[in-house]
Length: 218
Ligand SMILES: *Cc1c(COP(=O)(O)O)cnc(C)c1O
Image (cartoon, rainbow, N blue to C red; front, side):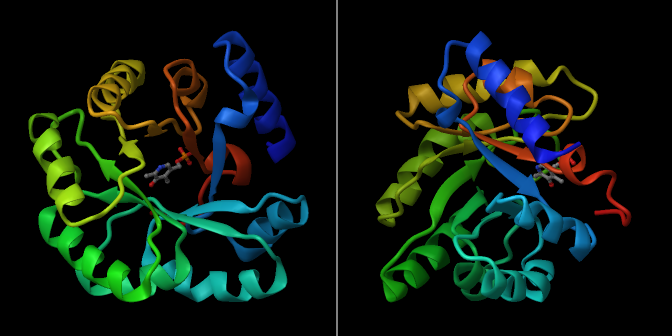
């Protein structure tokens, strides 16, 4: 679907929710998509993209960034602590902060560089054993840990369990953000971004609805 059509759907969802369309940032998730599709979206004028692997992003984004100005990249997949340096070279935002060791190492690097990406804490709202993210019960303490390292936290991110109603998880994430005084909410993907907007999403991560089905598994 052309990205302009996604923007129209975002505007409609915002109107229904009594929100301004400017309050929602569309992250075009380009992981594993062929370069030609990504380039077409860049040509259309969109500049905010998401990738879930540092190494994959390193392979394609330096070239695109040299060709198109004003690109903003969001890391939406897991970050290994040995990839922090390259991640900070490339990404303007990290959505997957989820453990103390990562927070500590990130803080050290951020201090050395003198600038910090926008940071979201990933919350495992479904408490799924195989999934990354801080458990809801541990969130408040983890936010304090990050703040203790002088990391500024913008908000929370979640990936709801596939078999559950996503809006329950969006509502839970919004509640936890409010309780902790955080304004950013990274939630909503191709199949559910409208309900995420209704529940307060500030950042939606949309891949296949923009680019088409991913050709390789992610
Ligand atoms: C792949 C991915 C998305 C986009 O998924 P679509 O269903 O293609 O929109 C969003 N968030 C995360 C964390 C992802 O890994």
